[in-house]
Every structure is written in structure tokens, then in C-alpha cells.
Length: 170
Ligand SMILES: CC(C)(COP(=O)(O)OP(=O)(O)OC[C@H]1O[C@@H](n2cnc3c(N)ncnc32)[C@H](O)[C@@H]1OP(=O)(O)O)[C@@H](O)C(=O)NCCC(=O)NCCS
Image (cartoon, rainbow, N blue to C red; front, side, top):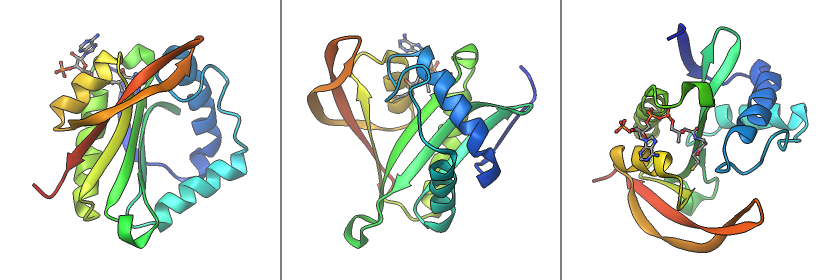
């Protein structure tokens, strides 16, 4: 495999992150946007990265092969005081790199950071037919919490989403 680097996203990564999100969106039906569907201004992405630096319960990690982002994971910690110990998790990997344990490596790192940030719960939603993601999440200790019916709409079809949670205080 190419030499890869994993690190926290910096403000200067905003443009490459937008390119990445627009490519990866076209590589699966399981992300919130399709190809070229991430139309967020670069300044807003910079603010989001800065917010992840400023918050003590959020982080964005990226994986680079050379100059190119090939994977990204985010913990978005809730700002509200009474929810502050919870964070929402999301992840994607470029298709060329699937099934090479990059997702496993990113999740391992992010869980380590989550523990250091004293988070107690990590939550996510995953489309019910996303077998690879579900396998990864279960392997990393996430449990099913429930189902949102008809949560996802892509290619003219509504699909259920499984809600999953990992507790870090077990
Ligand atoms: C889900 C995703 C992040 C996984 O990344 P990855 O780097 O391929 O993950 P890994 O290689 O570390 O692990 C994938 C696991 O899924 C398993 N897997 C892959 N395809 C599978 C399938 N069709 N059915 C069941 N398990 C499958 C692999 O065997 C592996 O498990 P193992 O480590 O026990 O062998 C990646 O496929 C992706 O970005 N998909 C598109 C975006 C997406 O769905 N994001 C999640 C939204 S909730």
C-alpha cells in the first residue's frame, strides 16, 4: 500500500476535504450526499474544522496518501452541557482503499481520542443494508439501539437506518 499518514484535519485541508467529499459521495449510496453533492463553501468547512479544534469533545481525522485525502472520520460532540459526553460518529474511505483495514485503523484512533476526551457514548446511524460499515461497527464494539424507519432516501428508495451506540464507560 502507498505510504499513508493519519492526522487531525487542519484549516488548510478545507479545499482538499471538499474535493474528497465530492468524490467519495459518488462511490457509494451510503453517504449523505452523492457525487458532487457536497456544495458547502470553503469558509464554512474551515469554520467546521476550527470548531472541531476548539471543542473538547470533537475531532476530525483524515488519512492522506501523498497530498490526497483517502479517508476521513469525525466525532461531532454535542455542545449542550447535558449532552456534552455524547458524540456523533461518521466515516468514509475512498473505494480504491476499501477492505484494507483503513476504516479499522481510523476507528481505533478515534476511539482512543474519544476516551482521552472523556466522552461516554458514541452514536451513529447506518443504512440497514450497509454490510461493510455494520461489520466494522460491530467489530469495534457498537451495539444496535433501534431502527429509524424510512430514514434514508437515495435512488428513489426509502431505506431504514440502524441506530448504533458504543459506550466508553463500560
Ligand atoms: C464502511 C467503510 C468506512 C469501511 O472502510 P474499510 O477501510 O473498507 O474498513 P476495513 O477494511 O477496516 O473493515 C471492513 C470490514 O467490513 C467487512 N466487509 C466488507 N464488505 C462486507 C460485506 N459486503 N459484508 C459483510 N462484511 C463486509 C470486511 O471483511 C471488514 O471486516 P474484518 O476487518 O472483520 O475483516 C468503507 O467501506 C466506506 O467508506 N464505505 C462508503 C461510505 C460508508 O458507507 N460510510 C459509513 C456510513 S455509516
